[in-house]
Image (cartoon, rainbow over all chains, first blue to last red; front, side):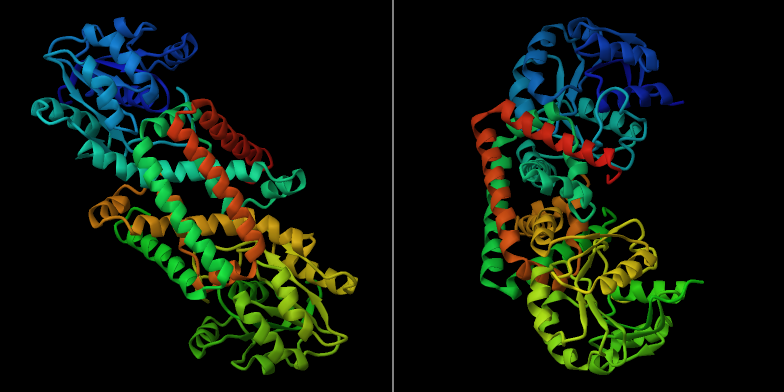
Length: 295
Length: 295
């Protein structure tokens, strides 16, 4: 077996992502010699202990990160600022702090100032997830064949970036380096806006009169159902993502809304060729996805 | 084997739906003694002949419906008015004319006036489909476990409705009777609006600068991909659906847009509890679908 990437890995947060990393580390053995798991509640931490996927369970985030050569923030991004303020002074010299949040400019803004001299900061975003959450939702294949985007600030120690890359590769992911601002725009359109739309249409349907709502559920198979799957995701995580990628998300929503209004106008005025052209583009994009094996 | 529901069944249109009905009739034998398939192009009709799923292939819709005791319009709904005008005078006395269109008020508007005295008109909508189209896309399990909604005008012959009901049940569907206006509102929210949104967001993504677009495809897995599957559907069919369910679709889109703007405002002003509440509702609707086995 290869040498473990880390001596002591501290996972701060034990939901879908954190517990999946713990499971992988336990299964492989070459991620870290010791895995410390921290969770916000005794209930979650107790469940991690029951699952037997941590070497150490620690309810205090400060004690959890002490002596770790790698700390991974796996909490909702809205909790990062206070977590970083608490653990920052206790990070070991030479340690790497990284994260799994879906927004990257906000993480650099919230965590960056709390990273001491001599500690390396490598923000990351594994693009993997399901509509389920919590420690029981994790599984060791979660990252397989998925992308993990790293957005190290300029001047980040190259060796630290390489170690985080190796870590994610052993988790099954393919790693790509990206500028944080560019990252936030790309995920705004591929992930955050689709989720905002899915949450919204569920609310729109739920607001309909009682009888129609019942039938919405009954006949959901024809398109709506696919939106509800996306919409079943974790509320706190998504609340934080929206609030922490505000600029890019609002820009993409504004673009989308303009386009939807143009489509509405074409429907109202019977502009058949406009509508057909838009549907054709959807089809073309689907085909492009199939061509690059992403569909 | 049970007696066939019909003596001579004429399918006007041979795409995903029409060719699936033909396949089922061929496989079961208790749908009709003779299945006549009509298609708009020689190419499609030739393919039906090659597939061996029709007793008679007929390029002329008038000849196709002559002597049939059941005629099913399986073309895009925009073609119904001219098709009905052409075949109406040639429908056999006592025959039933039905259809598979996703809009029902427009079908009653376009087909109704061309139905002669003594011919029964039972509009129908099998809620089944895939993102594929054409005669090769059909398959005999397409309607299994799916709903078929019938919207017979007031005063329609009950025996004719019963025969169409039996027809769809043998195709594997569960039949429900619904008022046409109510039908159009329900499908506007469960199917037509989700499709309009999916087509639109594909266009929004496609309009982004070249580099971002490439990454949109590369990282599509996180939500966007589910939208592109919906968006891959047949352009002519969807163009016609949008134009023929205009009022209900525009109303649902207006409701959705209001809700999306309210969400945008909450994101802009950091209204965390509003966002969280909306995400919770999405989750609740998903749970309701799971509870009734529709997820």
